[in-house]
Length: 119
Image (cartoon, rainbow, N blue to C red; front, side, top):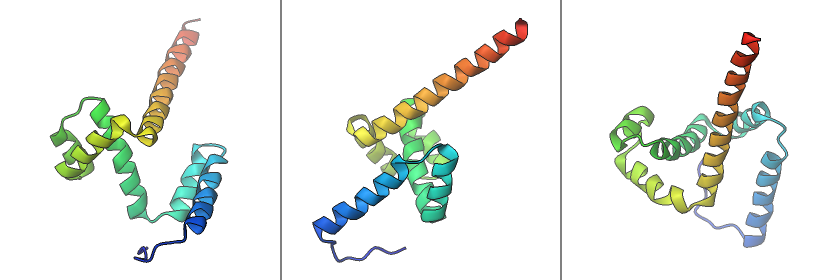
């Protein structure tokens, strides 16, 4: 989808962004969010957003620019831009914290299941 060079009225922009945020805030689970994203965004838009979040995650994990570039097929400039934005950008920080929470929960779920097998 192409974006128009004409600016929206601020009131309309505020209204439509409210709709967007409301729709995703009311999602019940990751599968529902996936259905909405895949239904609303093009594959290119979806992958673009996913790459930005993944690059921030990989930077936090200590991967090199080269590893991130090759893994995600993005430019050094994009990696650099995300590296500059992510630490001070609340959106990236919320996303990264959600990923950490999920990784922590998965790790403990696995440990608990292993422990229960012993008993």
